[in-house]
Image (cartoon, rainbow, N blue to C red):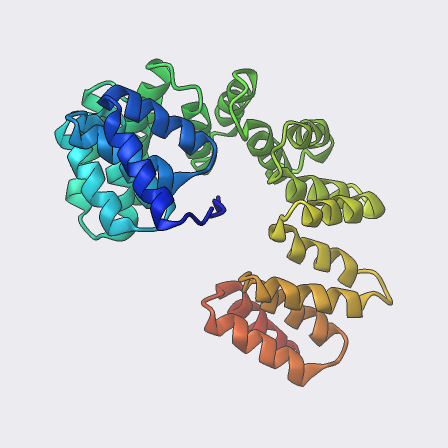
Length: 328
């Protein structure tokens, strides 16, 4: 989220600092939280600093959140460290997540998540499970996700469902996804719809994905478009993808281009959209564009796109390139 900056004069800043220090620590913290809700992070930071300097150490967590939002990660770590020292529960997971992204200290990340879990934070259980999942330890991850569910974390149903689906236990996975939907977990409709797509249960997926979009789960556009296309509703699929684009979902670009590339006379449109996908960072578009160019007899251009895809680390592009060369 980008927060617009409201420029202030030096005099205004000095007056604000004086106002912040004039309040007691609790009042300064409350004022800071109010300013955060209004998007005025710089002003909120002054009040949080005044609260911290007045002895309210736990406010360091709020300072860490602001520093992270402003992409000052070194400062964020320092603030979260202070919050951990003050025993702020949420700070263990916040610091663990930041270190997981910005450092190689996996052992410390694990300790932070374990301590969060020990102190009763179900996010610690979930994040620890995700850490083990990255290591390939699915059994421990499954146990931790179940522990989070038992602790009342409804969102962990989705985590456990993903593990079960990955292991081929589809019926059980579906139960957990549907339970997440019943608990109105954010993103649950989209996850369930995507799961049904993967099982080629497109008709069942449609109402789930439409409900996802109605609920503001914009990630569902790509899944709904795919389900519609798979059922032969090409026009509605195209409209869905384009609506997703209007909502800023660039992940629909390749699927939209794929849809257009299969319609005679619309290859130029498809090519432009593939290239737009590449511009926004979706390098898988090189492979899809190459396949279309090869089909159109534009061999030299197809080879170039295959090579770009391979250079970006796309194994599918390499496989398709080899297969195409054999056919040639």
